[in-house]
Image (cartoon, rainbow, N blue to C red; front, side):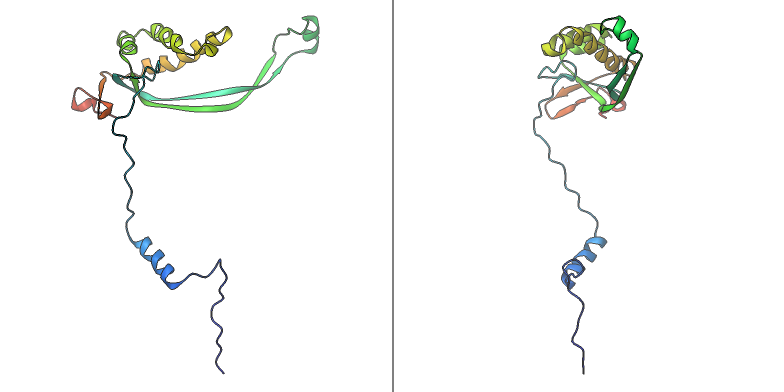
Length: 184
């Protein structure tokens, strides 16, 4: 007597011969990457003051900023009581909150580009702060915002590559003056 039992056909382990053949041929053929979609005329904003039409591109070292969040502030109990709730902080505990990767290429409008070319760090910070919303520039927020901008932009100024690229339609990364200063 012949046995007619075949392979078990559970949904998770069985596949048709055509499906196995398709997987085998896919493994032996080279991948066919699709090109990423391109935007025909992108709007390039100034990376400094967010002006709508950037005119110049600058290159510098890759900028990465780590932000930390305060999780606890420790004060001495007696200090807290004697100062009526205004004690000095003895220790501040923080944790990682956010990492920002700024990249190597920065676009700038004409006003910011003039300040960059003059290496006027404080003038650039003043221009950027003037363009920020009021919630970032009121009271103690102004000091913190200026400090963060100083940290970020001083790193840009310290690692700024010579030359700059002219941003033009069809060339959002800039047209660089010579072959050695090609777009990144």
